[in-house]
Length: 289
Image (cartoon, rainbow, N blue to C red; front, side):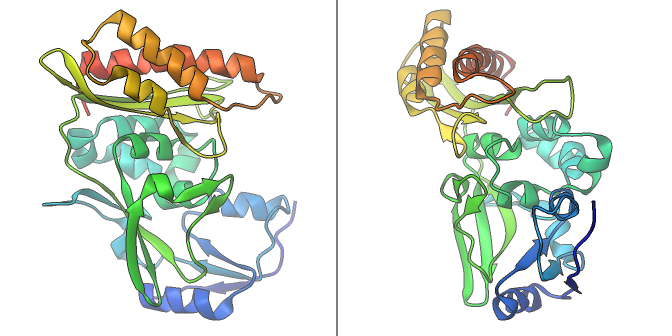
């Protein structure tokens, strides 16, 4: 293991960071927490000429509530920061609980929510629950800023729509009438494992009838996958074991898993069915968002 030679940049402002990314071009990598970037560099999977560190951008470490936007999370908030945030525990408990399952203490203390998203990994823990909660991301570049649904941001394994000079600065989760949400995953060890399958759900129930449902599957497609057939099967139905079983079967059919060393496609589909059923039941019964 070795670290390749590179030039290290520490811009003091967001505008300076965006300008650097645009000017340097080529093999430049943004460094947030570094849990993924530095590992890839050590094993030779990433060989940048330039590293642009965001460590001086203190404004990206905040979690706040904004009227009309909901909870806004800075891209440099660590996984541990998400887990410990009283604001997130109050409004969206499923997100802190997802962050708590991600990895060992060393990784959760340095890994960031922005890095977990921009990495674009199909196995990432946070995108499924964020998409289920209707999250959006803000991208800032030299020519201005844009906001788009997180669901549209990741377009393939390791691929996003972020431009060369753009930085993901914020993730916002809107206020919503959701009755409950949850995130479940299956890994090959009890904690800190990459997901073999993950399922995030957000369900709204009114007078015993499911008025809305979002089901997002992780690790079973090139990107976090909305199980839209499963969602449609629930809407307008009375809460029942039969409705949940039908949705779980539809989610398994919606999934597009591959076979690898950690499990066959058939095995993963069955896990999707089982974990969707558990996630829906938990979201409905426990009722916390």
